[in-house]
Length: 255
Length: 247
Ligand SMILES: Nc1ncnc2c1ncn2[C@@H]1O[C@H](COP(=O)(O)OP(=O)(O)OP(=O)(O)O)[C@@H](O)[C@H]1O
Ligand SMILES: [Mg+2]
Image 1 (tube, each protein chain N blue to C red):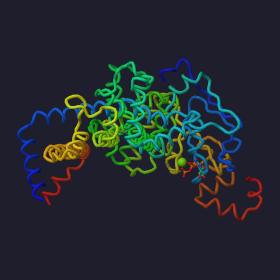
Image 2: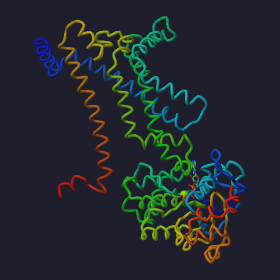
Image 3: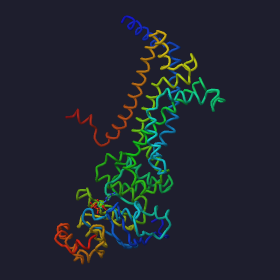
Image 4: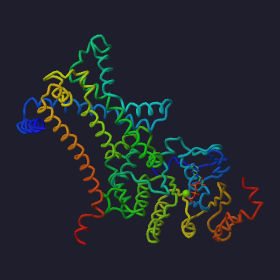
């Protein structure tokens, strides 16, 4: 949001594939992310949700196709942040974890303290300021990772299953935090396994299966009845590989 | 056996009375080895980390070479440094042969590969953990390097200690390049070798006792340091000792 005047969005994926060895893990994905909504990426385990976020965030490069932002590389790096599926804590105190991120972004020392304090009180970790981050519980680490990303005031924030290992109360807290971040104008692109969460948070839903984007729709429409039959099955809690095994047509289509 | 008992008693007297010759030898040993380890750390810690963070052609050969150099025989290092520093050698004009500086150079060469190789291993483990996060935050290799050294500092102490152990215990290199000259380049290990060959077991044993005590206490100090920091880290959440006593 510090670069509000020069937005890095839209982010465009053009025919993006990612492959390791012979395995094509992301297949011919073409989509665009504009300013505005909160996008939730759903799909079964191994669908490629985390890989998609990594590709967008620039941690891995596509094997073919291209990913473009509307700004130069330096601006793109500083205008986005990501929270990983497994929170990665620096072996420092809670406050120092946030401080480090701010320092890397070149936030001057006298402004850092305020940003640290407000980010940490936002997630309710203020009292643990001086605790080494790696002794926190997984849920607290998840919140700290969010605070660290949020303190950067990114224009785009990627969240990879931000509530995967949280109890219901913590999940509620974290959802509120994400909502607050969203309300401040940050573009949220998140993955989740929690369909309830997708219902609560998402403005639009992307359904991934085996590295393909099978459906992208406004959340209301999607949850009212997805067009794609695999997405329907997923919403009903069916095991997709089971359907796949019985349905030869789909096996052929899927390479 | 009586010889040994007498020698031990004499050694104890030397140590307790603070024999000036003994003190001179011990302090030179410490100065040489500390300097060597300091220089080797300044080179080896960043070098080890750089080998993890920077990808360049020949990186793997350097890694393999460093690991091989960890077992470098001190006498060979001594010989090479001797040839370099001897009057006919390329660095002869410096006039460093048979001075403590020559000994520092030799021990630095001996210790740097140890510190660098161990650092590379430790930093690599940490980097696997940190990589995505640091890259996500926009840290390039130059920013990541000090971060990894700082966050890995407690394990890296072990690497530096291994280097110090090597430096203070070796005799071959300092003997060749220092010459074991009384009051100039005589250190604990060379003195022990000499006194034993002369048959003066008391001084040799006294020095041996100090050498042992020294390496033991440095290791103990490092262990304590780690322990204290660990304890502090935990004490804010759970205090193991208190819970133990209360139950
Ligand atoms: N480095 C890698 N090497 C080989 N295969 C990989 C690698 N990274 C990911 N994959 C494979 O790519 C597929 C997609 O992985 P990804 O982590 O994106 O799944 P996901 O949709 O996030 O699943 P989950 O819901 O379990 O988090 C998986 O089948 C995984 O095994
Ligand atoms: Mg994932």
